[in-house]
Amino acid sequence: MLEKTMRMNYLYDFYQALLTPKQRNYMALYYLDDYSLGEIAEQYQVSRQAVYDNIRRTEAMLEQYEEKLGLLRKYERRQQAIERLRDYIDRHYGADAQLAALVDELDELD
Image (cartoon, rainbow, N blue to C red):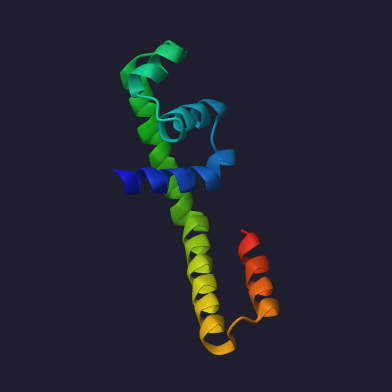
């Protein structure tokens, strides 16, 4: 469950601008603020089932966006490449501050 929550949080970060305000609110409350379905339903005066259905549809949409655009996949690949670059610099160049600063700059672009 924690892995799914982390994935949904990442997908939400990348694709939230493509969601409706209602979808953003439900996802933020459920995944970021850890509200229960019942608490969200009470806040929006809808049924728990309506909240559940909306969240499941939104999760599916986020997965489809990722399938087509691949922003999370590309981000993860960049992070892995940056880590390999840091390791390589440490092994072959030691404490080269200029190289380390360049890698940090690359890392901050995300």
